[in-house]
Image (tube, rainbow, N blue to C red):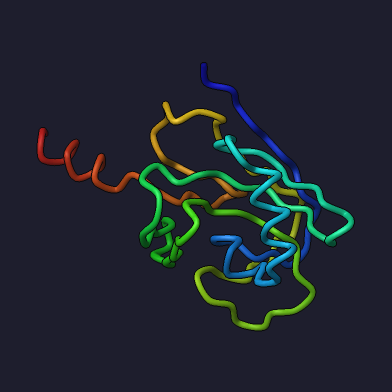
Amino acid sequence: MKTEIITTFPPGLYYVGDLCYLIQDRDQWSAVCNAIANTWCGTVNLPEHGIQAWFSSTKWGDGTYRDQFGREYEVDAGLIGVCAVKDTTPVRGGHILAFDRPFECFGYDSDDWDGEIMIGELRIDTDPECDVDEEEEE
């Protein structure tokens, strides 16, 4: 069964990418992993660790994926997420992006989807092989 998961965030600076690169404290990362276990997509709200995030599993796990602007997102924990940050310090694996207005993150809590992760106006394709196959068929 495919369940839509939509979360809205206020304007601000956000890290977009694999959360394992942003959350490097072992206890915090362990808490995140426990909170998202057995879930494809959703929110993580761990105020005791100062973490409020949204995430979606990628279609094919680890690898490098691109958004429609060509930016790359390295994935080592099988997911891409969104988490507020306070500054624009460069980070590995993803990007710090400024959102000028409220934005939605959209995904499915299921492995039965097309692999596209939607974050505001960003579209990150985590099933690029599917696009190649479709182009070859035409």
